[in-house]
Length: 372
Image (cartoon, rainbow, N blue to C red; front, side, top):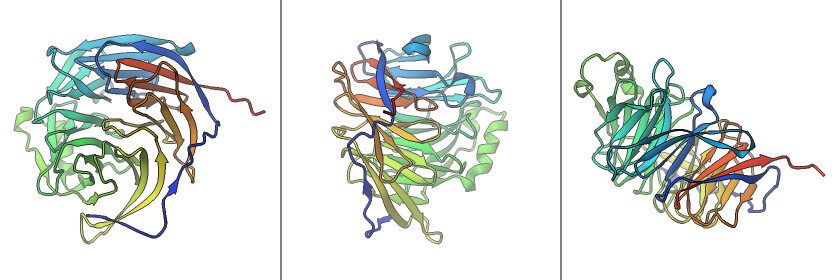
C-alpha cells in the first residue's frame, strides 16, 4: 500500500471566485420524475462534440446543444426491463467509426446502443451486480471498462462483445468499485476506486495480446480466453472514506471522496516492488456540501477545468492547471436545489450541463466577461 509522503503540504484552493469566466443558465429540462445519474458529451467523434447523453431509470436519451441555449432531443432508448435503473453512460464507436451509446446500471447488464439506428448492437452479461461506471478508451474507442458493485472492473470490446480482462482477485477491490478511468496516453493503464477507500492503478501490458486478439476473434465471445488481472501495480490510500470518482490528469490522479474536496495527487511507483510506492498529494480543490456519495466531476477535453455539483444543487468550476488552484466560478440558481449527480463540460468548457436527483438537466453557458 502506498504511503502518503509527509513534508510539503498540499496547496489548497481559495473559495473566492476569480470571475475569469462567468456562466449563466440558458436552459432547464425536466426529463422525468426519476433521478438522473449521468450526463456525458461525446468527445470520441468531432462531428458530435455538441451531442450528449443522459441516463435515468430505464431510459437513455441523446440530445444536441444548439445555439442560444437550445437543447434538442435526438433519440431516446427505453430498456425492455422497466425496473432497470441506469447509473452510467459513455460514448464509444465501432471500428468503422459509427457512434455507440453504452449504458449500465442496477441490472449489471451493459447495453451497447448503435446511435445510428437506435437499436441494441450488443448486450454484455458478466458482472454479478450493478454497474457504477463505464468509461471509453480515448485512443481505441471501441474498448470500454466497467466498474461494478461485484468488486471487479471488466475490459470489453464493444465491437465484438468480448470480455477481455477482469481486474479482480487477490489484489483487487474489497468492496464496490465506483469509478474507473483510462490513462490519456498510456494505453495499458487504468485507475479504479471504490468503497474500500482505495485507488488502484492497473497495467494491461502483459495482457495486451488478448486485447488485440479480441478484435479478430471469430468464435463465440463466450469462448474467448478472458484473463484475470489479480494484482494492481499501485494501491493508494489517499482518502479515509468511499472514493466515488477518479480521473487521470496526465500521470497525476484527481479523486474525490465524501469530504467536500477533490484531491490531485501523484503516484510514485517503486519499480522493483509492484503495489508499493508513495503518494504525493499536490493540490486540493474544496467543494462545500459535497458529502454524499455518487457525485461525479467532469473536465473539458483538454483538462483545463473541472466542474462538480454538490448536494445543494450548486456547481463549482476549478481551473486545474494553476497552482494554487483557482476557483473560476460558483454557479447557483434559486430553483436548483436538488443534488447534482454528475456534470458534463463541453469540449472547450464553454457549456456546463448537470443532471440532478429531481430528474432535471441544467445548461449553463459562458458569458463574455468585460475586462473593465
